[in-house]
Image 1 (cartoon, rainbow, N blue to C red):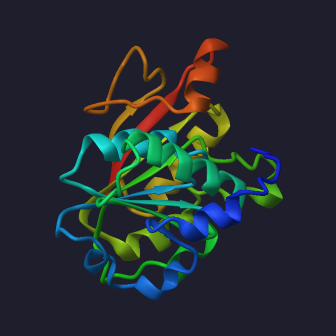
Image 2 (cartoon, helix red, strand yellow):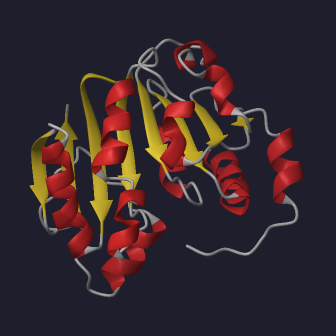
Length: 216
């Protein structure tokens, strides 16, 4: 998604105590960042943060890490997180700036992440760009390094070709696809489904949402 630069974003992010601009300093020790030792869930490409803000504010028993690399998006995420938490400090959520393609600079096998969310990522339709997909085999191999045993990935997309290709990527990386649906709103597979901004938009256009749960 293209988004205009937000002049206020840099200043607000630097002032936010739950934002980290150089997250690599916590590589291998993310569990120590949070005040409570509890499962860690990560959203890769959090966009405006509405999904993670809603999810994390409703589940204080889980620690969340929201990842994006675009400053304007992070700024909007910061504001949405603050609103979801009624402007109180979110003890179980941190917002970080990182390129998901280089996610192994941020996480290691010492982090033991329980779940990864990938929601409506860029489909990169041109063959020469396929390796940039967040579900590509190259990326999945990186995620496997910090997902704990039996760790899982929740994936949602509107894009048919990306979904079919992703099924192959998961198989190539030896993930077990536990649940799958080609119409999430008619065949729910998640214990709860928080609709993202894109999800609402695509559904309103009559586009079916594809989703899966994969486990390593």
